Length: 219
Figure 1 (cartoon, helix red, strand yellow):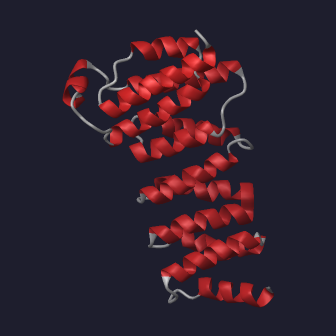
Figure 2 (figure 1 turned 90 degrees about the vertical axis):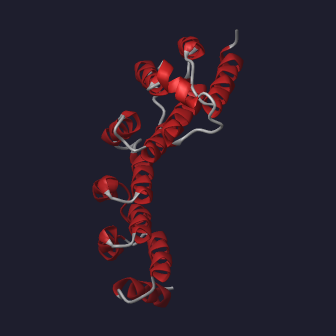
Protein backbone atom coordinates (compact mmCIF):
# COMPACT_ATOMS: atom_id res chain seq x y z
CA UNK A 1 0.00 0.00 0.00
CA UNK A 2 0.97 3.69 -0.12
CA UNK A 3 2.49 3.70 3.38
CA UNK A 4 4.78 0.79 2.56
CA UNK A 5 5.89 2.41 -0.69
CA UNK A 6 6.72 5.63 1.16
CA UNK A 7 8.82 3.65 3.63
CA UNK A 8 10.68 2.07 0.72
CA UNK A 9 11.31 5.48 -0.79
CA UNK A 10 12.60 6.66 2.58
CA UNK A 11 15.11 3.80 2.59
CA UNK A 12 16.42 4.86 -0.82
CA UNK A 13 16.69 8.49 0.26
CA UNK A 14 18.73 7.64 3.36
CA UNK A 15 22.40 6.86 2.51
CA UNK A 16 22.92 5.57 6.06
CA UNK A 17 20.63 2.58 5.45
CA UNK A 18 22.39 -0.82 5.04
CA UNK A 19 23.14 -1.84 1.47
CA UNK A 20 21.18 -5.09 1.71
CA UNK A 21 18.10 -3.13 2.79
CA UNK A 22 18.52 -0.68 -0.10
CA UNK A 23 18.83 -3.59 -2.53
CA UNK A 24 15.48 -4.94 -1.31
CA UNK A 25 13.96 -1.48 -1.57
CA UNK A 26 15.22 -1.03 -5.13
CA UNK A 27 13.78 -4.38 -6.13
CA UNK A 28 10.40 -3.58 -4.55
CA UNK A 29 10.23 -0.02 -5.94
CA UNK A 30 11.08 -1.35 -9.38
CA UNK A 31 8.14 -3.74 -9.26
CA UNK A 32 5.70 -0.90 -8.57
CA UNK A 33 6.56 0.47 -12.04
CA UNK A 34 5.87 4.03 -10.92
CA UNK A 35 7.70 6.21 -13.44
CA UNK A 36 8.50 9.16 -11.15
CA UNK A 37 10.46 6.75 -8.91
CA UNK A 38 13.09 6.63 -11.65
CA UNK A 39 14.60 9.76 -10.11
CA UNK A 40 15.14 7.85 -6.86
CA UNK A 41 16.71 4.93 -8.70
CA UNK A 42 19.07 6.80 -11.04
CA UNK A 43 21.62 7.86 -8.37
CA UNK A 44 22.19 4.20 -7.52
CA UNK A 45 23.57 3.62 -11.02
CA UNK A 46 26.65 5.49 -9.76
CA UNK A 47 26.74 4.00 -6.28
CA UNK A 48 30.12 2.92 -4.92
CA UNK A 49 28.84 -0.62 -4.30
CA UNK A 50 28.48 -2.76 -7.45
CA UNK A 51 25.60 -4.82 -6.07
CA UNK A 52 23.53 -1.65 -5.74
CA UNK A 53 24.46 -0.50 -9.24
CA UNK A 54 23.36 -3.88 -10.60
CA UNK A 55 20.03 -3.82 -8.75
CA UNK A 56 19.43 -0.24 -9.91
CA UNK A 57 19.69 -1.43 -13.53
CA UNK A 58 16.90 -3.96 -13.03
CA UNK A 59 14.73 -1.46 -11.16
CA UNK A 60 15.16 1.24 -13.78
CA UNK A 61 14.32 -1.17 -16.59
CA UNK A 62 11.08 -2.14 -14.84
CA UNK A 63 10.11 1.47 -14.22
CA UNK A 64 11.15 3.15 -17.48
CA UNK A 65 11.15 0.14 -19.86
CA UNK A 66 12.70 1.17 -23.19
CA UNK A 67 13.58 4.65 -21.90
CA UNK A 68 16.11 2.99 -19.59
CA UNK A 69 18.21 1.74 -22.51
CA UNK A 70 20.41 4.86 -22.68
CA UNK A 71 21.41 5.04 -19.00
CA UNK A 72 21.88 1.26 -18.88
CA UNK A 73 24.12 1.22 -21.96
CA UNK A 74 26.50 3.64 -20.22
CA UNK A 75 27.18 0.97 -17.60
CA UNK A 76 28.82 -1.28 -20.19
CA UNK A 77 32.03 0.47 -19.16
CA UNK A 78 31.48 -0.19 -15.44
CA UNK A 79 34.56 -1.60 -13.66
CA UNK A 80 32.56 -4.51 -12.20
CA UNK A 81 31.83 -7.52 -14.42
CA UNK A 82 28.58 -8.34 -12.62
CA UNK A 83 27.23 -4.86 -13.30
CA UNK A 84 28.23 -5.05 -16.95
CA UNK A 85 26.57 -8.45 -17.32
CA UNK A 86 23.36 -7.08 -15.81
CA UNK A 87 23.53 -4.18 -18.30
CA UNK A 88 24.00 -6.58 -21.21
CA UNK A 89 21.04 -8.67 -20.03
CA UNK A 90 18.92 -5.52 -19.96
CA UNK A 91 19.98 -4.56 -23.48
CA UNK A 92 19.05 -8.07 -24.60
CA UNK A 93 15.58 -7.49 -23.16
CA UNK A 94 15.22 -4.40 -25.38
CA UNK A 95 16.92 -5.78 -28.49
CA UNK A 96 13.74 -6.82 -30.31
CA UNK A 97 12.37 -3.28 -30.08
CA UNK A 98 15.65 -1.48 -30.73
CA UNK A 99 17.76 -3.08 -33.50
CA UNK A 100 20.83 -0.98 -32.73
CA UNK A 101 21.02 -2.70 -29.34
CA UNK A 102 21.14 -6.05 -31.08
CA UNK A 103 24.09 -4.74 -33.07
CA UNK A 104 25.71 -3.72 -29.79
CA UNK A 105 25.25 -7.25 -28.47
CA UNK A 106 26.99 -8.55 -31.59
CA UNK A 107 29.91 -6.18 -31.10
CA UNK A 108 30.34 -7.40 -27.53
CA UNK A 109 29.91 -11.07 -28.39
CA UNK A 110 32.38 -11.09 -31.27
CA UNK A 111 34.87 -8.49 -30.12
CA UNK A 112 38.09 -10.30 -29.30
CA UNK A 113 39.00 -7.59 -26.78
CA UNK A 114 35.75 -8.05 -24.83
CA UNK A 115 36.32 -9.90 -21.57
CA UNK A 116 35.14 -13.55 -21.71
CA UNK A 117 32.35 -13.24 -19.14
CA UNK A 118 30.80 -10.35 -21.01
CA UNK A 119 31.09 -12.17 -24.34
CA UNK A 120 29.21 -15.11 -22.85
CA UNK A 121 26.40 -12.87 -21.59
CA UNK A 122 26.14 -11.16 -24.98
CA UNK A 123 25.95 -14.55 -26.72
CA UNK A 124 23.19 -15.65 -24.36
CA UNK A 125 21.23 -12.50 -25.21
CA UNK A 126 21.77 -13.04 -28.94
CA UNK A 127 20.35 -16.51 -28.46
CA UNK A 128 17.14 -14.91 -27.19
CA UNK A 129 17.03 -12.57 -30.19
CA UNK A 130 17.75 -14.88 -33.10
CA UNK A 131 17.40 -13.40 -36.60
CA UNK A 132 14.44 -14.50 -38.67
CA UNK A 133 15.79 -13.53 -42.10
CA UNK A 134 18.15 -16.02 -43.74
CA UNK A 135 20.93 -13.52 -44.62
CA UNK A 136 21.15 -12.35 -41.00
CA UNK A 137 21.08 -15.93 -39.72
CA UNK A 138 23.95 -16.82 -42.06
CA UNK A 139 26.00 -13.82 -40.87
CA UNK A 140 25.47 -14.87 -37.25
CA UNK A 141 26.43 -18.44 -38.07
CA UNK A 142 29.67 -17.33 -39.73
CA UNK A 143 30.52 -15.14 -36.74
CA UNK A 144 29.92 -18.03 -34.37
CA UNK A 145 32.13 -20.33 -36.42
CA UNK A 146 34.89 -17.71 -36.46
CA UNK A 147 34.62 -17.35 -32.68
CA UNK A 148 34.86 -21.11 -32.17
CA UNK A 149 37.97 -21.23 -34.37
CA UNK A 150 39.75 -18.31 -32.64
CA UNK A 151 43.25 -19.25 -31.50
CA UNK A 152 42.89 -22.92 -32.35
CA UNK A 153 46.29 -23.26 -34.02
CA UNK A 154 48.70 -26.12 -33.39
CA UNK A 155 50.57 -24.42 -30.53
CA UNK A 156 47.34 -23.56 -28.76
CA UNK A 157 46.12 -27.14 -29.03
CA UNK A 158 49.39 -28.53 -27.69
CA UNK A 159 49.32 -26.25 -24.64
CA UNK A 160 45.81 -27.36 -23.75
CA UNK A 161 45.93 -30.95 -24.89
CA UNK A 162 45.80 -32.42 -21.38
CA UNK A 163 43.54 -29.81 -19.83
CA UNK A 164 40.53 -31.29 -18.08
CA UNK A 165 38.33 -28.18 -18.11
CA UNK A 166 37.87 -25.01 -20.11
CA UNK A 167 39.59 -21.83 -18.94
CA UNK A 168 37.92 -18.41 -19.05
CA UNK A 169 38.89 -17.85 -22.68
CA UNK A 170 37.02 -21.01 -23.68
CA UNK A 171 33.70 -20.04 -22.13
CA UNK A 172 32.62 -17.86 -25.08
CA UNK A 173 33.42 -20.79 -27.38
CA UNK A 174 31.21 -23.07 -25.33
CA UNK A 175 28.38 -20.52 -25.55
CA UNK A 176 28.94 -20.13 -29.31
CA UNK A 177 28.79 -23.90 -29.77
CA UNK A 178 25.47 -24.02 -27.91
CA UNK A 179 24.09 -21.39 -30.26
CA UNK A 180 25.38 -23.21 -33.33
CA UNK A 181 23.53 -26.29 -32.18
CA UNK A 182 20.30 -24.27 -32.34
CA UNK A 183 20.75 -22.41 -35.63
CA UNK A 184 23.51 -24.20 -37.56
CA UNK A 185 22.86 -25.56 -41.06
CA UNK A 186 24.65 -28.28 -43.03
CA UNK A 187 27.45 -25.89 -43.91
CA UNK A 188 28.00 -25.17 -40.22
CA UNK A 189 28.04 -28.90 -39.51
CA UNK A 190 30.64 -29.46 -42.19
CA UNK A 191 32.89 -26.62 -41.00
CA UNK A 192 32.54 -27.61 -37.37
CA UNK A 193 33.43 -31.22 -38.11
CA UNK A 194 36.81 -30.06 -39.50
CA UNK A 195 37.76 -27.86 -36.53
CA UNK A 196 40.06 -29.43 -33.94
CA UNK A 197 39.31 -27.86 -30.58
CA UNK A 198 41.82 -28.03 -27.76
CA UNK A 199 40.70 -29.12 -24.30
CA UNK A 200 38.43 -31.94 -23.20
CA UNK A 201 35.44 -29.76 -22.35
CA UNK A 202 35.45 -27.97 -25.70
CA UNK A 203 35.97 -31.21 -27.63
CA UNK A 204 33.12 -32.86 -25.74
CA UNK A 205 30.82 -29.90 -26.39
CA UNK A 206 31.79 -29.97 -30.08
CA UNK A 207 30.85 -33.66 -30.35
CA UNK A 208 27.54 -32.99 -28.64
CA UNK A 209 26.70 -30.11 -30.96
CA UNK A 210 27.61 -32.14 -34.05
CA UNK A 211 25.27 -34.91 -32.87
CA UNK A 212 22.58 -32.30 -32.27
CA UNK A 213 23.01 -30.96 -35.81
CA UNK A 214 22.88 -34.46 -37.28
CA UNK A 215 19.63 -35.19 -35.46
CA UNK A 216 18.11 -31.85 -36.43
CA UNK A 217 19.27 -31.75 -40.04
CA UNK A 218 19.29 -35.45 -40.90
CA UNK A 219 22.07 -37.29 -42.71
